[in-house]
Image 1 (tube, one colour):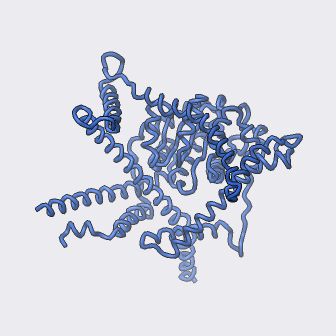
Image 2 (cartoon, helix red, strand yellow):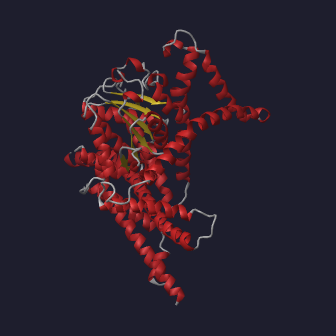
Image 3 (cartoon, rainbow over the protein chains, first blue to last red):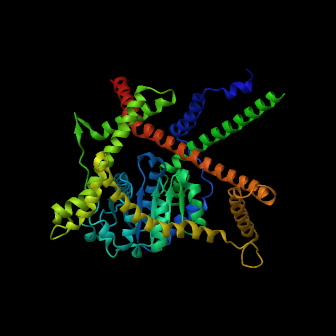
Length: 275
Length: 243
């Protein structure tokens, strides 16, 4: 067995060991890399939030579950922190059952840090089944869809909801998504009610959503952990996103190395078999 | 948000117990990377069971209870003076879904399915055509010549690339004529654009999967290993060494 044959027959567990080391070492050693330039979709997202007047309400949908937390929680924390620092009012909803608890965690941790008051600066309305029906209902009357918030308080009596009836009173909607919910928000909230929509998504979904940026159906897009790190850098508050990027970069280098070696081995073997 | 009460169990806070359970289950799932084993299977079954149970509880607490049970039985809790019997209609339709468990009556489940299909088709068809077809078509109609409108040469080139990419990719998926001549050339260029798209998709997928691993490693290192394994052992050694 020659060298290239050995490479192609390499036990996949060695690849896993390499990935594990590429991820574990930078985290345990506390390596932090510079991020370079911010990608235009993240910058557009940031600019859309910056353009809002203090006191304006922002609707944030937590449409993800614990399995996507590593990518979307850093995004959520950075976006909520940005909104609270701009004195924007945050109204959270969830089309995923798991979104209620995740929103509660993000709001309480960032809210406490920023000195924000639940019910005055932010509210977690929680999960409601029916996705499309919920998105359409919010365009008519939010308190009809959510008579109570996730803590059981009457929605219409909350200070944070003052003057907020429907999309018409909400200048920006943000969907933090791990599934196909952005298509729903774009199709129903944007097209029917002309709601401005921005999205924070897992990297897997990015290529599906870029066309909506070009058409203006999305005003901004934060893509995966990289987008979270960029956003943290924009708001000058480094968190898990920036901390994870060194591991991300080294793991990518390892994968690029494997792809190149694998291709060389494949072509070398093909050439050898022809000869 | 109400302050969460710290619950203890045999003197340990449930937070500590939760972190230990999460860490053990994470390591159990990772053990699959070596080979399939009973510990992995156990963790997988626990995950599926808890996810299903959690979903049922949340849907009941946040949808069924406030939208069906409370308007009927506790109207004051949802701001109603009298019970709202109209909610019995969607409630009954929802219950009909369970008729699928009884072979003799399973045809009844077609009614709620027909209702949902009709409602969602009516809502989805125009919205989808507008959002994902007309708007995307409009996005493809871009100025190509920098002299005619006020665009830079680079933007014009970018627009040209977009239009060529769309037409050639559509050409690849046009199967009513043999892929020869101009159509053949366009479809070959279309394959190139598809490959670029697949490459971008693969790159993003790799980034997403690595991010998930990073999240778990950050949890294991910062939330479990540091405070609950290394920290106490280090303190113990310092205590023994100091004593």
